[in-house]
Amino acid sequence: MSARSDDASPATASALLRVSPLPALEARILLGHALGWRRTELITRGDEPLAEAALAHYRALEARRVAGEPIAQIVGTREFYGLEFDVTPHVLIPRPETELLVEQALAAIESIARPRVLDLGTGSGAIAIAIAASRPDAHVCALDRSPEALATAERNAARLLDAQRPGGPLQVMQSDWYAALERTARFDLIVSNPPYIACDDPHLTLGDLRFEPRGALTDEADGLSAIRAIVAAAPAFLVPGGSLWIEHGYDQAAAVRVLLTERGLTDVHSLTDLAGIERATGG
Ligand code: GLN
Image (tube, rainbow, N blue to C red):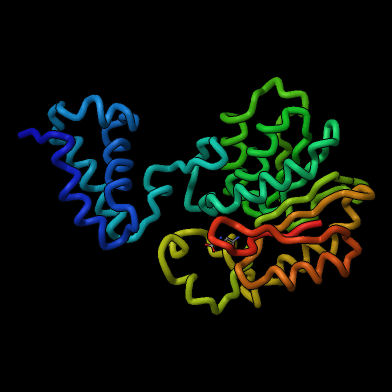
């Protein structure tokens, strides 16, 4: 028996409708993954018969998605800042709104030659690697307390960064925030997308968040404790005039501005994402 690849879309869309806001797109992503085809091949080879094994593979992927598993974990990748990152259940799935933080980070180091950059809680390495890819002269240090996350970040760095980049390879270190850094280490820029969801936030039990590492999402407190820890020690690791940029929750911008201002950072302001939400704060 065989089926045409375009046969799969309507049936799939109806099954995926229950879990996905973009069922047709997700159907195409899963079908491409099952077949090992690129997006364009799904169009140009749409008339080819689908082998039964490929169809069965597709159905198995679809069943996982319908059971709630995030599509990025099923296919094992997610695009962020124009780069394709490996994603595992041990890391936060890179989100489009975090690209705002990368843009701001790049602006903060624009006029600095060979800038030193620190990414706290790097996870997949998305922020650190996006910065390093855009600024080949930057020395970028990526820390995480999770060894599994660091393995993913290292794999992504090896695949996505030019081995010859003048800033050197991504420096990856296991560390609980700043704990493993030498006391003399100094950076021009510190960035972080820390766990900022309060432990009693019902969103933790919904959607993709159910499948992501809890430690990447919540501080198991009021949502601000990781940010407080990062801000408190930041001045000790920044050069004079250095910048700190942090992603935070939709209702945390004012609190984060106060924390940064209290620690002596200047020009403190927040960035608004496309949805009109204050997403990141820095100075
Ligand atoms: N932006 C994520 C969400 O709200 C949370 C990520 C984080 O805690 N850093 O789904």
